[in-house]
Length: 267
View 1 (tube, helix red, strand yellow):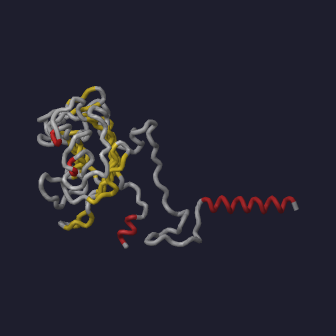
View 2 (view 1 turned 180 degrees about the vertical axis):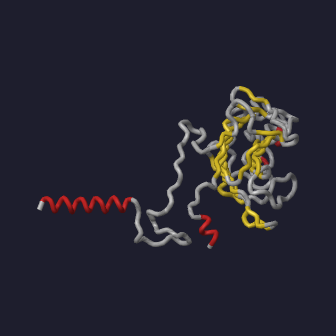
């Protein structure tokens, strides 16, 4: 009798353990080849987070290591970037021109820390101005927006010339600020746009844009308009004539793990 009870208990434990791994008698998920809690569904890859907040996770590409700009080139000359590097950061060298990553990217998660000059000079767009251009085309504005009136779609965190941020979360001049950006690149079929770009942006932990549709490449005093482009292109930092500083820049490609989106698109 005792033996029979033990066998029954073992069977219950085994069944529970099996159920913990998933089910095949549950409904099918719409548009996907998987059941709810399907044990056959591919698991996401392991990523080790950084030990410190803001640090790069294990699958990130470090674009600046605090020592040199070996992963960047000058946009105008194609030669090595010449912005000043010191004390673990680099600084826009006015009149040196924009710089671009040697590596090209599509859909990404991007982390950038930046600081405008502690000594305030100028006003509006002339105060701590720079910019982060995803694929060299789609600008998230960098600006000293602390008690600095300017047009709404040009302040810090704006998708420049298109969408103002949901909030002004800028810290004081000279203090380090943090962008965390998710960028979905546009898709084309020949000359036809099949999917626009989207941006999600956090400034200092505050949401500024929640998967906001981008109207097209950034332009000044004009309407944006999409034109065919490569699937991947460089990240560009803008020289707008102000000595803005950057540090701790890392990026993650977001197209390495398929959760079922491609299956839905094919249907």
